[in-house]
Image (cartoon, rainbow, N blue to C red; front, top):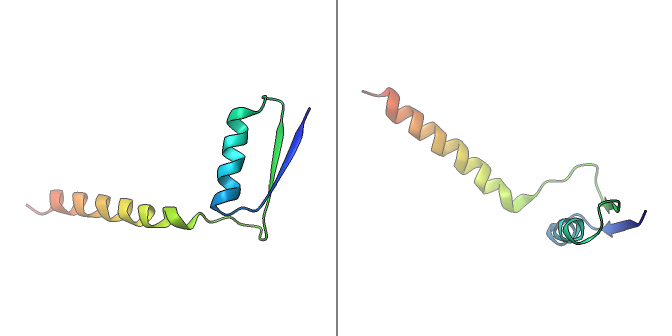
Length: 65
């Protein structure tokens, strides 16, 4: 069984890990190492708030009659 280590959890490291997962055999272990104990993919954060506000406004427009 092969083992691969990706150092870095920013956008590049995560992208590499996903690409490797698609290209390597199923038995390959991929370990991603970063600085902290948590990972927050910052570019996706605006989409999270957009989804909240989209739901909020679609629900509030239905309740006001």
